[in-house]
Length: 259
Ligand code: DGL
Image 1 (cartoon, rainbow, N blue to C red):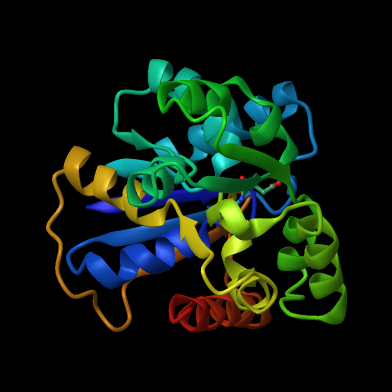
Image 2 (tube, protein in one colour):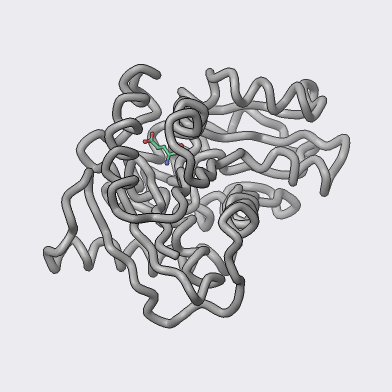
């Protein structure tokens, strides 16, 4: 089956990267809305219109399922897209449940974009999990910009994260949840700064489990060079330097997977 992965930018590659390793029989489209990234600092109306345009494009590409590999787009637009289209649409959910299942009664730092943090969807999740006293929310918008310009582990990234984390005494925390797919590129810096007991959790495995279930896919060992078509906001990426840029992200994700 041809499966589309959609994100505001290159964050969604972290979900595709995982999919390529476990889905040997499928083909992939990756759509990064590079004309409009970042989404997290825009209005909900703007994000909805970007997602609407992306879905118009993707549903014309003969895909069997669309993975919204973006927490922000999921938070704003997954419901209306499901009302509009009948193919399986799989969204992201910050891995708060995973954290609380593994470590009940421990606090969790949930990081995401501003829209996701301010949105109703995350509040509903916290209420459903009875996690009001455990989930601490923090927007880390600058990580999206750092990721888009391939600035992964500079002094500026480290200082930004140290400053943002300074507000917490992590003694009673079990984990940090990466509630934005762009944040996966910074696991090494987070590992360096956070106390050793802090787990770093993302929602990628949960999203792919849902994809496998809803699209009825077969899991196995992924191909070495799986077929992927890349698009920036609907334009096919063919330029050598842009393909090299995308490969660089995938290499970075290989490294982050080991952390
Ligand atoms: N990658 C996106 C997410 O998972 C959003 C980043 C952005 O465009 O602000 O939330």
